[in-house]
Image (cartoon, rainbow, N blue to C red; front, side):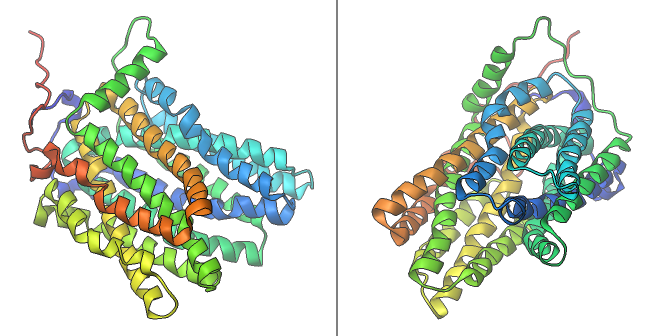
Amino acid sequence: MAHVVTTATTEKKKPESLWGNQGFRRLFAASTLSDMGSEITFVALPLVAVIVLEASPAEVGALWMLRFVAFLTVGLPAGALLDRTRKRWVMVSADLGRAAALGSVPVAWWFDVLTIEQLFVVALLTGVGNVFFDVASRSYLPSLVGRDNLLSANSRLSSVEATSSLAGPSVAGYIVQFFAAPIAILIDAVSFAWSALCLSGIRHREPEPQRREHPKLMKEIGEGIRFVWHHPLLRPIVVAGALTNLFLTFAIVAAPLLLVRELGLGGGAVGVFFTFGGLGVLLGVSTATKVCKVLGSGQSLWILGIIGIPFGFLVPMMDVGVWQWIASAAWTVIIFRVGHNNVVLVSFRQRVTPDHLLSRMNATMRFVMNGMEAIAAALAGVLITFLGVREVMWIAAVGLAVAWLPVVFSPLRSMTTFDSAYPGAPEPERAEP
């Protein structure tokens, strides 16, 4: 496959050498604890507001919004800024910043000076840290492990994230029950400090980014957006991802309402349903490498898309009794496909993007994906109000049944490996004489 990359990141490494990579081992260790800490805070921060500060529903809603608004406000500028610098020190700085922000919560609670305004600031600052860390880490990985190891590396890192999302909320619940919600926040602060320590010890040094005279932020942001939109692989990836997030969010918003209000099953049923989904993510990301070897990297995307269609239509048929378990099992299959696609598509994105555009590409992707989730959440509430919960679940099922079609009508459908040639591939960069 012809694509534009610098020689610094095209060094071939055998997949079995991944655990022998000192930098990846430290990145994996950093991700393991910090991902678990983040999932704990995902549950604990709103509980601090509700239990400790007796916040109103509007204040809790604002707290949730501030955690994600950073992706829509600073996401694109972050990508342009990160393409100007080395990524590892940004990741370390983001970890330390998030550790300090979160650590202020248990300190203020201990001295009885904690306020909802402080939680707002903490949510906003950790959101900004999440933006810079997420974009930097995805842009740093190709340099750290080599592009030939991206699928395996992304699969292992995503497995950690999926395991954390599966276990983190339960752990947070027990910590809050037996200790206090601010103690759970303290654990996350420590996890970020641990992550910074692990990352600071990586011996690998990424190449110095290309320097530009008189760089202009808006121009660089535009270059990243145009690169994604005009690329024959990245455009279908971003469109399919946006559609998937749109309809997946519809289902995620509607499912608890269907289970609790229409079926009267209680909060435990909601937990079971989403636990099935967490299991699906874990299976999808952990088996992505093997599935790609059997089906082919690009082919696996549309093959799993076709397989998942009938399962998607079982979820809106959820009812009391056996249909609760059938729908939950079907949800596992759907989320398995989502987890698999995340690993494969992120690897394709990193593989075909030149070094000097990696951060802007990742920032553009996150802007679209997270922006679509925010829009979908608001739209789902409106549709549920006017159409009904089960009707929105059917809309989600139909949408997820066709969300993968942009991949079918792209060069991805026939790419057996990440190195397969495809129409419209950029010409390789020629060395200057």
